[in-house]
Length: 150
Image (cartoon, rainbow, N blue to C red; front, side):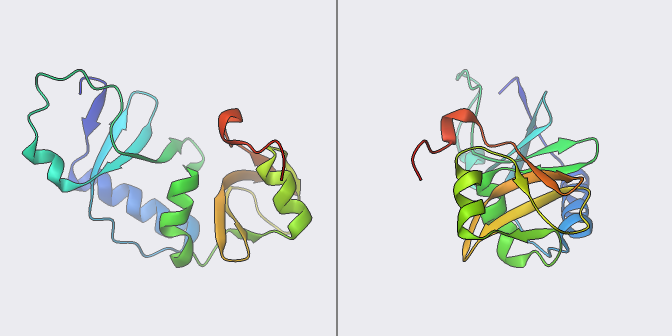
């Protein structure tokens, strides 16, 4: 796991504090946090300690949770699903037409005073996160995960 670094409790606490500031989300994530050189955070069960990884060549492990950006935390789709129910701030609810645009990978025009990363929600589903600026939410969903027909 040469490309991944296991985060200590202090580093994990910084991430949890940032989540609380950014989303007003009180979360208790009982996982091992790993960070790669691109500041992407992955979560994995604490049971990973039972496995001898020294003989393995591992590039990725666990669930991609978020990326630490200079202006906040950008949650992955799965990251938004993990903390979305607990978030009380910076959650944008889409209508059906906006949801279709989002799933197709398009940016969304919104009304609201947001200027940071936000969680995207449609009804009871969390669809990921995006950067909001000038009444537009910029879509970071990778092309491979976008839907061609919605």
